[in-house]
Image 1: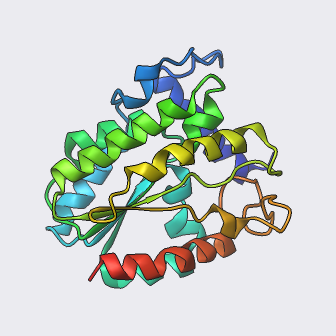
Image 2: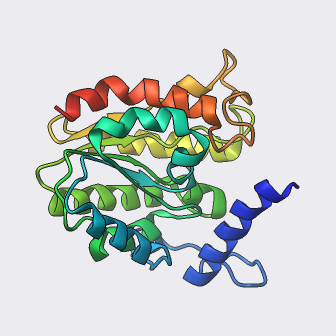
Image 3: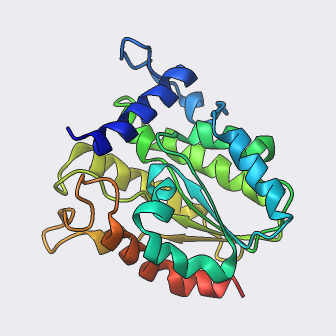
Length: 242
């Protein structure tokens, strides 16, 4: 394993260890239905609050998620620049589950500005880190995230994305759990304030397998993968940002 690939994994482990999801011996704690909806603190929260304070309300589009969102400004710098006119705020944190994101949202990261739109993509780590996590638990966590955004930012519209494919093949067990979770997410849209898109197919080949040229580790997009993501959501975001 190369150092660049090792560091995100180490960060992810430390986040989960601090939250009590894994022990320092590496043993995963058994999951319960309430885990995905119970807020858990994250150490980057203070940094985000300071960034929001310095924006003085100049936030238009908020990207919410885990490492897949977190890495966009760096790995996908060119495509991320396409959001510039919308004053984007990236609130993605590597390694997070739904419960980690919830803690940040209820504790200040939705305060001090009024965004026009939020793009939410979370849940893959609930599946990837927790073998016993059920799709309905993940979906419940995502539903609560949507509810919190609606309560704290009632003027905003929400683009909820299905969990991206993960694993080399369509038959990968984690990929199948993502598909099952996405089926539960679609009904959360009312097409008035909450809109749902599953753009996962854009990352797949004709056999339904994940394209390595877009996601080399079969989980995180590279620069080309982020371009695909941007082009897939740009028309809808342009509509929501009017």
